[in-house]
Length: 222
Image 1 (tube, one colour):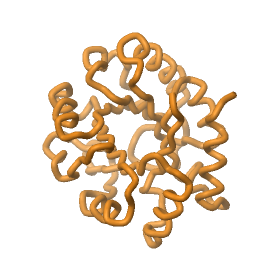
Image 2 (spheres, rainbow, N blue to C red):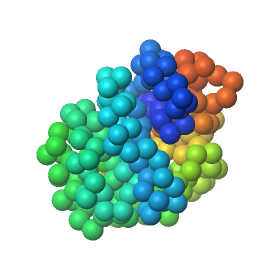
Image 3 (cartoon, rainbow, N blue to C red):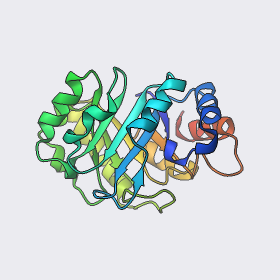
């Protein structure tokens, strides 16, 4: 399965966003990851539909929209999902998950579900065929700079095994302390999409080009 990098824009330099987006395109980012937080599902507020519109106006990269919000079905249309985009909702945040995944697909985007560290993978057992991607949260969502939850590594492996039996084309994304060292372990466990933030792609001391190349080198195996 192809390795893909999805830089987390909440970790970008928002005072020089256009320059960072240009650098990410030049470094061949696969997606731009947008963490949308509502202050209820997670204890933080970040980004929003106007920010996404601004990003679309200066970048042609597809967007990976991570809705960390209560009742995402009430807010989905605000983000105007486009063909090629990923829209990821949390299993824990909606009452009618299968219906929401079908709505995302009907809009032309790729439906995905995120699982918090304490949410077991069997919660997705009856929607596996409705998914294009599963996002395994490797930290509790809400803030950048957290430590990896160790139990997330065997969880990635178990999720890959479950998908291989029901929907082998579905991808696994990881988000949370995707450092250069951790990314390699996550990739070995079965992840193929890596959300890079302050511990890798936007790591102090690296240019975006250097960090993207280093992260890619950590997750491409012989």
